[in-house]
Image (cartoon, rainbow, N blue to C red):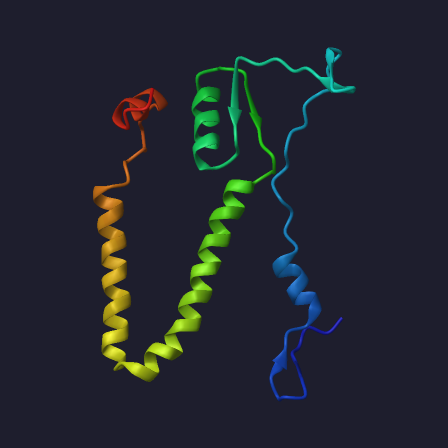
Length: 156
């Protein structure tokens, strides 16, 4: 197995597949399965298993996982129900990549119409606005209980 780059027809070195495999084939975190239950019920002619828990968290996004972690720290039996494993993280990463693509597409257009100092000034201003948004709008959650956050955000 060769790990040296090989030139393609256009003269650009191609990264060997073995290296790409090592970089991109990453094992996802293990997810603990739930043991089969003896209880079940019939719903529209389908047998559905019945599970019990102290608290049920719907959704595996950032808020759902935060709630589950906080409850587990308190010794509560928690069950996280999600339509897709890691869906919240997948959505966040997708939004990031969409906007990275938008910036990549509009940058050449902006270079053709404006001086570069104005373009980088614009992107710098956007970063400052994002920083101000995080400082003044996004609440701090470190070291705060779920109840405190509900009270802070006026969620009942």
